[in-house]
Length: 213
Image 1 (tube, rainbow, N blue to C red):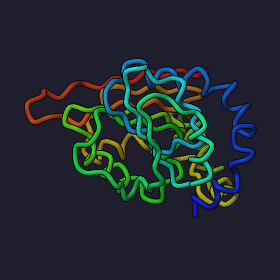
Image 2 (tube, rainbow, N blue to C red):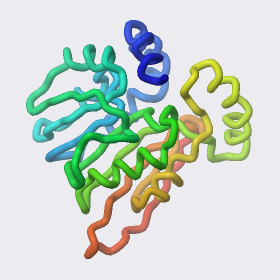
Image 3 (cartoon, rainbow, N blue to C red):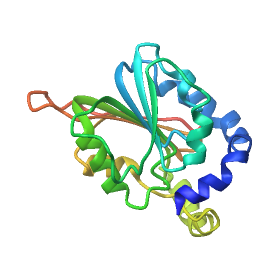
Image 4 (cartoon, rainbow, N blue to C red):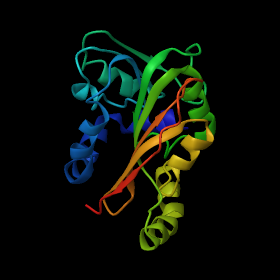
């Protein structure tokens, strides 16, 4: 069970993530938050690492399955702020609740990503944006082969995490229109930006940037 797994990791999670933060995540996280405003939901908040990046005019709701992670995150309070224990596949919010939804390193561990993303589509307001930072299946042939090869062993070790999901495809399958993607760190980390289009909006064209570092 992911919530119990992350409960057990709470005391060491931030320390264990330090190498990955230094190499990749610290420079990518700020790209998710600079133009957010209004009512924002962050899924999988963990220990609240992202809270420092939000603009001051955002009203933040954060969810996580792990109650112990939420207890740590609650120490990083900010104005207009609330936390709730919830599963992204069964969200406790009504339709059209949020202006933006953000997540980092979440859908690698969700048992059914399509169900979770359809829930996010339901609770996002028309015209609202979904912004994700995920580690995904490699984009180049070599990177794809490596992530496919390692994934069974990594998934067995972590009991939840998958290295080779193609999350952008699942975002599109859930009904979102992808407006922007970026690949980083040998193409295995991806920033995905998408919109829940209102009926009157013209579908924007997405674009992909690839960075090997």
